[in-house]
Length: 347
Image 1 (cartoon, rainbow, N blue to C red):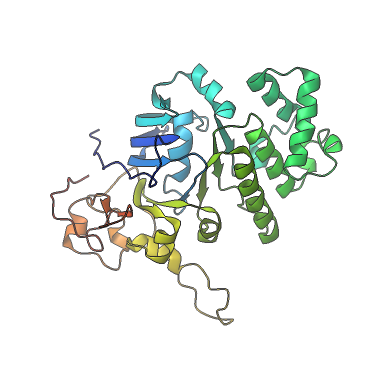
Image 2: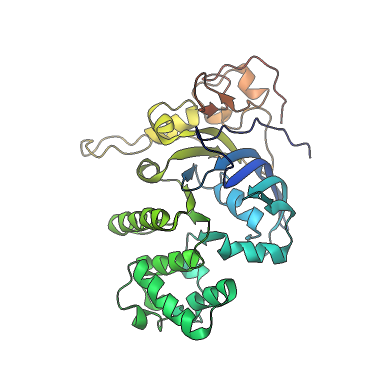
């Protein structure tokens, strides 16, 4: 498959040597029944201490983009990763499975969407946390146990000594997610990937977990990639935002630029679908019409064209590239809102 090359994203002003540098990343997924082009030629950077939010509908490629290069795909799915994903200069796409096992946990921590599935239901919580300290930091059993207690306190779990003896199913959803966070940060990684960490939790618990993630990020000096479909979370947490649609980044900029001056019609539609807190009872909900495209059978042109209110002829003939707004690092891939004069390849 021919991979199109988008221009590399701009860096944070004054920053050098990003912690994470992704260029030309594409991911093909192979199952027994289909071949899916889950991610197509994405490019972005994440700097130390920065939070990048990846936003988009379910199925847009957000999770695959972050987990496939780490070798964290579900059983029965084979992923072919191309391009480069450099973490502290090391290209993870060229790393062996043994090396990726060393990177996971030690350099990159992952908070999964569903902690009940991510945690082993047949093991008590304590051993699951303690093994990170033994395997990643080389601590003995006593030191690992003491650190597990310390980290449960750090993530706000009361009575940590007692909680270590519990099984995951004996905990609430919010508490299980705190355990997952404790495991993810146990080796104090450089980068934390939080994949929809507040999904299926009530609003109060969501708020508490976001505050926890922000506090831990500052305390440990981590960078964070936050995968979410919740624009409210983006406004609260993110420094920069990448908007994904159909496996591509269609807009990239600072949180302020994306939320206040969105350039892509898809971004505008996502923002318009957020309910206003002061809207009168019974107000009509503004949803996004249509459905995401089938990534096993991609169409020619802009993937958003069938759902876009601004669609024009060029939108159905060729794929727009990420183009930088004059005088800023704000990028968008749209023929209409971002005029492009150079010829663009079709899919």
